[in-house]
Image 1 (cartoon, rainbow over the protein chains, first blue to last red):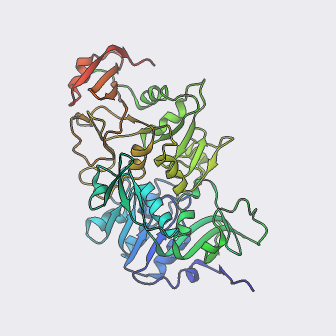
Image 2: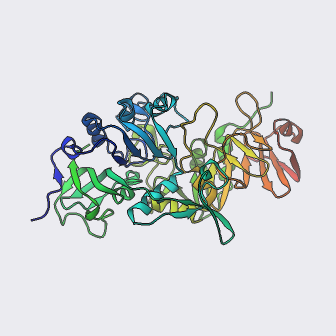
Image 3: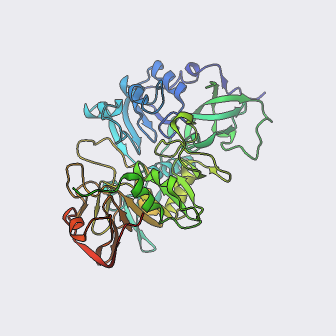
Length: 237
Length: 220
Protein backbone atom coordinates (compact mmCIF):
# COMPACT_ATOMS: atom_id res chain seq x y z
CA UNK A 1 0.00 0.00 0.00
CA UNK A 2 1.27 3.46 -0.90
CA UNK A 3 2.23 5.79 1.91
CA UNK A 4 -0.52 8.33 2.51
CA UNK A 5 0.81 11.85 1.89
CA UNK A 6 -2.58 13.56 1.86
CA UNK A 7 -3.44 15.61 4.97
CA UNK A 8 -6.95 16.79 5.79
CA UNK A 9 -5.93 20.37 6.62
CA UNK A 10 -3.00 22.75 6.92
CA UNK A 11 -3.02 22.65 10.74
CA UNK A 12 -2.26 18.93 10.86
CA UNK A 13 0.31 19.24 8.05
CA UNK A 14 2.45 21.76 10.01
CA UNK A 15 1.81 20.34 13.51
CA UNK A 16 5.34 18.97 14.01
CA UNK A 17 7.29 22.08 12.94
CA UNK A 18 9.57 22.63 15.92
CA UNK A 19 11.18 25.63 17.65
CA UNK A 20 14.44 26.56 15.92
CA UNK A 21 13.51 24.92 12.60
CA UNK A 22 14.85 26.21 9.28
CA UNK A 23 11.91 26.77 6.92
CA UNK A 24 11.86 27.56 3.21
CA UNK A 25 8.72 29.36 2.07
CA UNK A 26 7.97 29.30 -1.66
CA UNK A 27 6.51 31.88 -3.99
CA UNK A 28 8.06 35.12 -5.18
CA UNK A 29 6.66 37.47 -2.55
CA UNK A 30 3.11 38.47 -3.36
CA UNK A 31 -0.11 36.42 -3.50
CA UNK A 32 0.64 34.28 -6.54
CA UNK A 33 2.74 31.26 -5.61
CA UNK A 34 2.71 31.92 -1.87
CA UNK A 35 1.53 29.02 0.37
CA UNK A 36 -0.71 31.36 2.31
CA UNK A 37 -2.80 28.76 4.14
CA UNK A 38 0.27 26.88 5.36
CA UNK A 39 1.84 30.17 6.56
CA UNK A 40 -1.29 31.06 8.52
CA UNK A 41 -1.36 27.54 10.01
CA UNK A 42 2.29 27.92 11.08
CA UNK A 43 1.48 31.26 12.70
CA UNK A 44 -1.37 29.57 14.61
CA UNK A 45 0.81 26.60 15.58
CA UNK A 46 3.28 29.04 17.14
CA UNK A 47 6.74 27.45 16.62
CA UNK A 48 9.39 30.07 17.43
CA UNK A 49 13.06 30.89 16.90
CA UNK A 50 12.61 30.04 13.22
CA UNK A 51 15.01 30.74 10.36
CA UNK A 52 12.96 31.62 7.28
CA UNK A 53 14.41 31.34 3.77
CA UNK A 54 12.23 33.07 1.21
CA UNK A 55 12.65 35.45 -1.73
CA UNK A 56 10.80 38.34 -0.09
CA UNK A 57 10.16 39.12 3.54
CA UNK A 58 6.46 39.78 3.09
CA UNK A 59 4.63 43.09 3.40
CA UNK A 60 2.12 42.08 6.09
CA UNK A 61 -1.67 42.19 5.96
CA UNK A 62 -2.00 45.97 6.15
CA UNK A 63 0.28 46.80 3.20
CA UNK A 64 -0.99 43.78 1.20
CA UNK A 65 -4.09 45.82 0.32
CA UNK A 66 -1.84 47.82 -2.00
CA UNK A 67 -1.15 44.62 -3.94
CA UNK A 68 -4.55 42.89 -3.85
CA UNK A 69 -7.95 44.37 -2.95
CA UNK A 70 -9.13 42.93 0.37
CA UNK A 71 -5.56 42.08 1.37
CA UNK A 72 -4.07 38.72 2.28
CA UNK A 73 -1.76 37.20 4.89
CA UNK A 74 1.88 36.58 4.01
CA UNK A 75 5.15 35.81 5.82
CA UNK A 76 4.72 39.12 7.65
CA UNK A 77 2.41 37.41 10.14
CA UNK A 78 5.36 35.31 11.40
CA UNK A 79 7.41 38.42 12.36
CA UNK A 80 4.37 40.15 13.77
CA UNK A 81 3.98 37.16 16.11
CA UNK A 82 7.72 37.14 16.94
CA UNK A 83 8.32 33.63 15.57
CA UNK A 84 11.34 34.44 13.36
CA UNK A 85 14.92 35.00 14.54
CA UNK A 86 16.57 35.13 11.12
CA UNK A 87 15.51 35.82 7.53
CA UNK A 88 17.53 34.81 4.46
CA UNK A 89 16.33 36.28 1.14
CA UNK A 90 16.76 38.83 -1.65
CA UNK A 91 14.08 41.40 -0.79
CA UNK A 92 13.43 41.49 2.98
CA UNK A 93 11.45 44.71 2.50
CA UNK A 94 10.27 46.44 -0.68
CA UNK A 95 11.81 49.88 -1.29
CA UNK A 96 8.62 50.96 -3.06
CA UNK A 97 6.49 50.36 0.07
CA UNK A 98 6.36 52.42 3.29
CA UNK A 99 8.85 51.23 5.95
CA UNK A 100 6.09 49.65 8.02
CA UNK A 101 6.17 45.99 6.94
CA UNK A 102 6.42 43.59 9.91
CA UNK A 103 9.97 42.50 8.98
CA UNK A 104 11.22 46.07 8.63
CA UNK A 105 9.73 46.99 12.01
CA UNK A 106 11.13 43.85 13.67
CA UNK A 107 14.55 44.48 12.10
CA UNK A 108 14.58 48.07 13.35
CA UNK A 109 13.88 46.82 16.86
CA UNK A 110 16.73 44.32 16.58
CA UNK A 111 14.37 41.34 16.83
CA UNK A 112 15.25 39.71 13.52
CA UNK A 113 18.59 39.15 11.81
CA UNK A 114 18.67 39.53 8.01
CA UNK A 115 21.00 37.80 5.56
CA UNK A 116 20.63 39.53 2.19
CA UNK A 117 21.25 37.27 -0.80
CA UNK A 118 21.00 38.24 -4.50
CA UNK A 119 17.97 36.50 -5.99
CA UNK A 120 19.84 34.31 -8.47
CA UNK A 121 22.38 33.36 -5.82
CA UNK A 122 19.49 32.46 -3.50
CA UNK A 123 17.91 30.17 -6.13
CA UNK A 124 21.26 28.55 -6.89
CA UNK A 125 22.22 28.07 -3.20
CA UNK A 126 18.91 26.26 -2.74
CA UNK A 127 19.47 24.15 -5.86
CA UNK A 128 23.01 23.34 -4.63
CA UNK A 129 21.58 22.24 -1.29
CA UNK A 130 18.90 20.20 -3.03
CA UNK A 131 21.42 18.48 -5.28
CA UNK A 132 24.02 17.67 -2.63
CA UNK A 133 26.64 20.15 -3.91
CA UNK A 134 29.17 21.89 -1.63
CA UNK A 135 28.59 25.27 -3.26
CA UNK A 136 29.39 27.15 -6.47
CA UNK A 137 31.18 30.22 -7.84
CA UNK A 138 29.23 33.20 -9.21
CA UNK A 139 30.28 36.63 -10.45
CA UNK A 140 27.09 38.13 -8.99
CA UNK A 141 27.98 40.46 -6.12
CA UNK A 142 31.66 41.01 -6.96
CA UNK A 143 32.66 44.55 -5.97
CA UNK A 144 29.56 45.02 -3.82
CA UNK A 145 28.73 44.53 -0.11
CA UNK A 146 27.75 40.93 -0.97
CA UNK A 147 31.42 39.90 -1.42
CA UNK A 148 32.34 40.69 2.20
CA UNK A 149 33.77 37.60 3.94
CA UNK A 150 33.57 35.35 0.88
CA UNK A 151 36.31 33.45 -0.92
CA UNK A 152 37.17 35.03 -4.30
CA UNK A 153 38.54 33.12 -7.23
CA UNK A 154 39.58 34.14 -10.75
CA UNK A 155 38.31 31.64 -13.34
CA UNK A 156 39.08 32.25 -17.03
CA UNK A 157 40.03 35.82 -16.21
CA UNK A 158 36.80 36.71 -14.38
CA UNK A 159 36.30 37.19 -10.64
CA UNK A 160 33.84 34.91 -8.83
CA UNK A 161 32.56 34.50 -5.25
CA UNK A 162 32.14 31.17 -3.49
CA UNK A 163 28.52 30.72 -2.37
CA UNK A 164 27.44 27.91 -0.05
CA UNK A 165 24.37 25.64 -0.23
CA UNK A 166 21.10 26.13 1.65
CA UNK A 167 18.88 23.34 2.96
CA UNK A 168 15.92 23.32 5.35
CA UNK A 169 14.03 21.18 7.82
CA UNK A 170 10.72 22.06 6.17
CA UNK A 171 9.64 23.65 2.89
CA UNK A 172 6.18 25.19 2.55
CA UNK A 173 5.21 25.13 -1.11
CA UNK A 174 2.29 26.23 -3.30
CA UNK A 175 1.47 24.23 -6.45
CA UNK A 176 -1.52 24.16 -8.76
CA UNK A 177 -2.21 20.43 -8.86
CA UNK A 178 -0.82 17.36 -7.12
CA UNK A 179 -1.66 13.73 -7.64
CA UNK A 180 -1.99 11.70 -4.45
CA UNK A 181 1.52 10.28 -4.99
CA UNK A 182 2.90 13.82 -4.79
CA UNK A 183 3.80 14.80 -8.36
CA UNK A 184 3.27 18.54 -8.85
CA UNK A 185 2.43 20.98 -11.61
CA UNK A 186 2.30 24.75 -11.26
CA UNK A 187 0.38 27.58 -12.87
CA UNK A 188 1.90 30.65 -14.57
CA UNK A 189 4.40 32.73 -12.65
CA UNK A 190 3.30 31.05 -9.40
CA UNK A 191 6.02 28.46 -10.14
CA UNK A 192 9.04 30.72 -9.29
CA UNK A 193 10.86 29.50 -6.14
CA UNK A 194 8.48 26.61 -5.40
CA UNK A 195 10.15 23.81 -7.42
CA UNK A 196 13.70 24.46 -6.14
CA UNK A 197 12.58 24.75 -2.52
CA UNK A 198 10.51 21.58 -2.81
CA UNK A 199 13.77 19.75 -3.53
CA UNK A 200 15.86 21.20 -0.70
CA UNK A 201 14.04 20.32 2.54
CA UNK A 202 13.85 17.19 4.69
CA UNK A 203 10.08 17.55 4.79
CA UNK A 204 8.24 19.32 1.96
CA UNK A 205 4.64 20.34 2.61
CA UNK A 206 2.59 21.48 -0.36
CA UNK A 207 -0.66 23.41 -0.60
CA UNK A 208 -2.50 22.79 -3.89
CA UNK A 209 -5.58 24.14 -5.66
CA UNK A 210 -6.59 20.67 -6.74
CA UNK A 211 -5.76 17.10 -5.78
CA UNK A 212 -6.10 14.45 -8.49
CA UNK A 213 -5.61 10.70 -8.81
CA UNK A 214 -2.39 9.10 -10.13
CA UNK A 215 -2.61 9.00 -13.92
CA UNK A 216 -4.51 12.26 -14.20
CA UNK A 217 -1.34 14.38 -14.54
CA UNK A 218 0.56 14.06 -17.81
CA UNK A 219 3.91 12.53 -16.76
CA UNK A 220 5.60 14.63 -19.48
CA UNK A 221 4.35 17.81 -17.79
CA UNK A 222 5.24 17.02 -14.15
CA UNK A 223 7.57 19.74 -12.78
CA UNK A 224 8.25 18.43 -9.27
CA UNK A 225 8.68 14.64 -9.11
CA UNK A 226 6.84 13.02 -6.20
CA UNK A 227 9.88 11.85 -4.20
CA UNK A 228 10.47 15.48 -3.15
CA UNK A 229 6.98 15.84 -1.66
CA UNK A 230 6.13 14.62 1.85
CA UNK A 231 2.70 16.09 2.56
CA UNK A 232 -0.16 17.45 0.46
CA UNK A 233 -3.11 19.60 1.49
CA UNK A 234 -5.85 20.54 -0.95
CA UNK A 235 -7.02 24.14 -0.37
CA UNK A 236 -9.12 25.41 -3.28
CA UNK A 237 -8.62 29.17 -3.79
CA UNK B 1 12.24 75.99 -15.79
CA UNK B 2 12.89 73.72 -18.77
CA UNK B 3 10.51 70.89 -19.54
CA UNK B 4 11.76 67.42 -18.71
CA UNK B 5 10.55 64.26 -20.41
CA UNK B 6 7.87 62.28 -18.58
CA UNK B 7 8.36 58.60 -17.75
CA UNK B 8 6.38 57.36 -20.78
CA UNK B 9 8.52 59.44 -23.11
CA UNK B 10 11.76 58.12 -21.61
CA UNK B 11 10.33 54.59 -22.03
CA UNK B 12 9.50 55.36 -25.66
CA UNK B 13 13.10 56.46 -26.26
CA UNK B 14 14.58 53.43 -24.43
CA UNK B 15 12.41 51.05 -26.45
CA UNK B 16 14.04 52.36 -29.67
CA UNK B 17 17.11 50.42 -28.49
CA UNK B 18 15.22 47.13 -28.74
CA UNK B 19 16.43 45.11 -31.71
CA UNK B 20 14.47 42.45 -33.53
CA UNK B 21 14.64 39.06 -31.77
CA UNK B 22 16.19 40.33 -28.53
CA UNK B 23 15.44 38.73 -25.13
CA UNK B 24 14.89 41.68 -22.78
CA UNK B 25 14.41 41.98 -19.03
CA UNK B 26 12.70 45.08 -17.64
CA UNK B 27 13.74 45.92 -14.08
CA UNK B 28 11.68 47.00 -11.08
CA UNK B 29 9.59 50.16 -11.40
CA UNK B 30 9.86 52.62 -14.30
CA UNK B 31 11.55 50.22 -16.82
CA UNK B 32 8.34 48.15 -16.91
CA UNK B 33 6.75 50.93 -18.99
CA UNK B 34 9.01 50.03 -21.93
CA UNK B 35 6.89 46.92 -22.59
CA UNK B 36 4.21 49.14 -24.10
CA UNK B 37 6.49 50.93 -26.60
CA UNK B 38 8.06 48.17 -28.72
CA UNK B 39 8.76 49.59 -32.21
CA UNK B 40 6.18 48.22 -34.63
CA UNK B 41 8.57 46.48 -36.99
CA UNK B 42 10.28 44.46 -34.25
CA UNK B 43 9.55 41.30 -32.26
CA UNK B 44 11.19 41.04 -28.85
CA UNK B 45 10.78 38.53 -26.01
CA UNK B 46 10.33 39.86 -22.49
CA UNK B 47 11.91 37.87 -19.69
CA UNK B 48 11.09 38.34 -16.02
CA UNK B 49 12.99 36.96 -13.00
CA UNK B 50 9.96 35.22 -11.56
CA UNK B 51 9.99 32.75 -14.46
CA UNK B 52 8.32 33.92 -17.65
CA UNK B 53 9.60 34.50 -21.18
CA UNK B 54 7.60 35.98 -24.06
CA UNK B 55 4.76 37.76 -22.28
CA UNK B 56 2.79 40.45 -24.16
CA UNK B 57 2.49 43.94 -22.73
CA UNK B 58 1.33 45.05 -19.30
CA UNK B 59 -2.18 43.97 -18.30
CA UNK B 60 -4.70 46.00 -16.34
CA UNK B 61 -5.21 45.92 -12.58
CA UNK B 62 -8.94 45.32 -13.10
CA UNK B 63 -8.32 42.00 -14.85
CA UNK B 64 -5.20 41.05 -12.88
CA UNK B 65 -4.36 37.35 -12.76
CA UNK B 66 -2.13 37.14 -9.69
CA UNK B 67 -0.43 34.09 -11.17
CA UNK B 68 0.55 35.98 -14.34
CA UNK B 69 2.74 38.85 -13.20
CA UNK B 70 6.25 40.19 -13.77
CA UNK B 71 8.85 40.59 -11.04
CA UNK B 72 7.58 44.13 -10.33
CA UNK B 73 4.17 42.62 -9.46
CA UNK B 74 2.60 44.17 -12.56
CA UNK B 75 0.03 42.06 -14.45
CA UNK B 76 1.24 40.94 -17.86
CA UNK B 77 -0.69 39.55 -20.80
CA UNK B 78 -0.53 36.10 -22.36
CA UNK B 79 0.98 35.74 -25.79
CA UNK B 80 1.30 32.67 -28.03
CA UNK B 81 4.74 31.15 -27.53
CA UNK B 82 5.19 32.32 -23.95
CA UNK B 83 6.68 29.88 -21.42
CA UNK B 84 7.17 29.50 -17.68
CA UNK B 85 10.11 28.15 -15.66
CA UNK B 86 11.40 28.14 -12.09
CA UNK B 87 13.67 30.70 -10.41
CA UNK B 88 16.85 28.64 -10.83
CA UNK B 89 16.36 28.30 -14.60
CA UNK B 90 15.41 31.97 -14.79
CA UNK B 91 18.73 33.02 -13.27
CA UNK B 92 20.68 30.54 -15.39
CA UNK B 93 19.34 32.58 -18.31
CA UNK B 94 20.46 35.81 -16.64
CA UNK B 95 23.91 34.81 -15.32
CA UNK B 96 24.68 32.72 -18.37
CA UNK B 97 24.41 35.69 -20.74
CA UNK B 98 21.27 34.40 -22.48
CA UNK B 99 19.39 37.65 -21.83
CA UNK B 100 20.46 40.23 -24.43
CA UNK B 101 19.45 43.41 -22.68
CA UNK B 102 18.25 44.59 -19.29
CA UNK B 103 16.74 47.99 -18.49
CA UNK B 104 17.28 48.85 -14.82
CA UNK B 105 16.32 51.76 -12.60
CA UNK B 106 19.03 53.46 -10.54
CA UNK B 107 19.64 55.67 -7.54
CA UNK B 108 23.11 56.52 -8.85
CA UNK B 109 25.38 55.71 -11.79
CA UNK B 110 29.09 56.60 -11.77
CA UNK B 111 31.19 57.92 -14.64
CA UNK B 112 32.73 54.45 -14.95
CA UNK B 113 29.35 52.72 -15.23
CA UNK B 114 29.09 51.53 -11.63
CA UNK B 115 25.45 51.05 -10.67
CA UNK B 116 23.73 51.63 -7.30
CA UNK B 117 20.05 50.71 -7.41
CA UNK B 118 18.97 48.84 -4.28
CA UNK B 119 20.04 50.28 -0.95
CA UNK B 120 19.60 53.77 0.41
CA UNK B 121 20.15 55.52 3.73
CA UNK B 122 17.53 54.81 6.39
CA UNK B 123 16.17 51.62 4.78
CA UNK B 124 18.65 48.86 5.72
CA UNK B 125 16.08 46.08 5.17
CA UNK B 126 15.36 46.73 1.47
CA UNK B 127 17.06 44.20 -0.76
CA UNK B 128 18.77 43.92 -4.12
CA UNK B 129 16.32 41.35 -5.54
CA UNK B 130 17.62 40.11 -8.88
CA UNK B 131 19.38 43.38 -9.74
CA UNK B 132 22.92 42.18 -9.01
CA UNK B 133 22.49 39.05 -11.15
CA UNK B 134 20.97 41.09 -14.00
CA UNK B 135 23.71 43.74 -13.87
CA UNK B 136 26.47 41.12 -13.76
CA UNK B 137 25.03 38.67 -16.27
CA UNK B 138 23.08 40.39 -19.04
CA UNK B 139 24.91 41.18 -22.26
CA UNK B 140 23.87 44.86 -22.26
CA UNK B 141 22.80 46.95 -19.27
CA UNK B 142 20.76 50.09 -19.87
CA UNK B 143 19.74 52.44 -17.07
CA UNK B 144 16.49 54.41 -17.15
CA UNK B 145 16.32 57.05 -14.41
CA UNK B 146 15.53 60.61 -13.47
CA UNK B 147 18.60 62.82 -13.92
CA UNK B 148 18.47 64.30 -10.43
CA UNK B 149 16.90 63.54 -7.06
CA UNK B 150 13.63 65.15 -6.04
CA UNK B 151 15.74 67.73 -4.19
CA UNK B 152 17.76 68.44 -7.33
CA UNK B 153 20.98 66.63 -6.35
CA UNK B 154 22.88 64.89 -9.16
CA UNK B 155 22.50 61.12 -9.54
CA UNK B 156 25.11 60.74 -12.26
CA UNK B 157 28.21 61.04 -10.15
CA UNK B 158 31.96 60.51 -10.01
CA UNK B 159 31.67 57.76 -7.38
CA UNK B 160 28.49 56.14 -6.07
CA UNK B 161 27.92 56.83 -2.38
CA UNK B 162 25.08 54.26 -2.19
CA UNK B 163 25.83 50.50 -2.00
CA UNK B 164 26.77 49.07 -5.41
CA UNK B 165 24.73 46.62 -7.48
CA UNK B 166 27.71 45.88 -9.77
CA UNK B 167 30.83 47.68 -11.01
CA UNK B 168 31.50 48.77 -14.62
CA UNK B 169 28.23 47.27 -15.86
CA UNK B 170 26.21 50.16 -17.36
CA UNK B 171 26.41 50.76 -21.13
CA UNK B 172 23.91 53.56 -21.70
CA UNK B 173 21.90 55.92 -19.46
CA UNK B 174 18.52 57.37 -20.46
CA UNK B 175 17.14 60.16 -18.26
CA UNK B 176 14.44 62.82 -18.41
CA UNK B 177 16.96 65.26 -19.92
CA UNK B 178 19.63 63.25 -21.74
CA UNK B 179 21.04 60.07 -23.28
CA UNK B 180 24.61 59.18 -22.30
CA UNK B 181 27.00 56.38 -23.14
CA UNK B 182 29.68 54.98 -20.83
CA UNK B 183 32.99 54.73 -22.71
CA UNK B 184 36.57 54.05 -21.65
CA UNK B 185 37.24 57.80 -21.96
CA UNK B 186 34.28 58.74 -19.75
CA UNK B 187 30.61 59.60 -20.08
CA UNK B 188 29.64 60.77 -23.56
CA UNK B 189 26.57 63.01 -23.90
CA UNK B 190 24.83 61.74 -27.05
CA UNK B 191 21.36 63.32 -26.93
CA UNK B 192 19.59 66.09 -25.04
CA UNK B 193 15.87 66.61 -24.42
CA UNK B 194 14.19 69.14 -26.77
CA UNK B 195 15.14 72.68 -25.78
CA UNK B 196 18.10 71.66 -23.59
CA UNK B 197 21.76 72.51 -24.18
CA UNK B 198 24.79 70.40 -23.26
CA UNK B 199 25.78 73.03 -20.67
CA UNK B 200 22.37 72.80 -18.98
CA UNK B 201 22.64 69.01 -18.75
CA UNK B 202 26.21 69.29 -17.41
CA UNK B 203 24.99 71.64 -14.68
CA UNK B 204 22.77 68.83 -13.34
CA UNK B 205 25.52 66.20 -13.60
CA UNK B 206 28.39 65.72 -11.15
CA UNK B 207 30.47 63.58 -13.54
CA UNK B 208 32.19 65.46 -16.37
CA UNK B 209 30.40 64.88 -19.69
CA UNK B 210 32.18 64.58 -23.04
CA UNK B 211 29.87 66.17 -25.61
CA UNK B 212 29.52 63.98 -28.69
CA UNK B 213 30.51 65.58 -32.02
CA UNK B 214 27.12 64.61 -33.39
CA UNK B 215 25.06 65.68 -30.32
CA UNK B 216 21.36 65.36 -31.16
CA UNK B 217 17.98 66.22 -29.72
CA UNK B 218 16.13 63.19 -28.39
CA UNK B 219 13.85 62.32 -31.32
CA UNK B 220 10.30 61.40 -30.27
